[in-house]
Image (tube, rainbow, N blue to C red; front, side):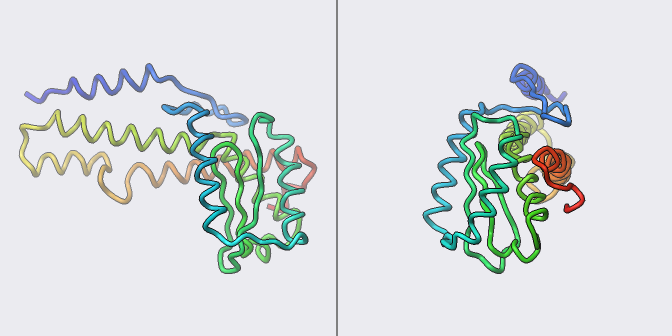
Length: 210
């Protein structure tokens, strides 16, 4: 008979760890990391990016990013975050990203896509939405849970055949590129879209620009 006590212990750990609620959407999320840990890691990664990537020095490009970003951050309800907005010189990269604690990076290839201040506000509000929803910490927590589940299943099915073990792991999407992580990431993006629209409207930008 298969021993499932390791999985029961994991379930108990997850329940004890507690849940948080995402602002604006009120979705319940599991967070196994403290916000202080996330912020410290985000600051460390941010300094690494600034040291390794070429920064845009042109004030005409940097000023609107910081002006729009700071307006949105001001209505985000997280004055404890040390918000920073910087631009990386990467004309071929039409993207932006955010690290835990409010460190936002815009790649210069985004400007032609954003077109104007409204478009820029839509992107930055989306990134700020990721930050205040603590999506980075949530993703780290989910990865930790998946690793624990993989270990627990390996123990529980230790006496089973290799084919059975592989089948169980595959059924849970473990060890594969796709599975649980991809749809979860998409839900985070949709949630950041929703929060971003609210924030840009609160900051005085037209959500239709999105």
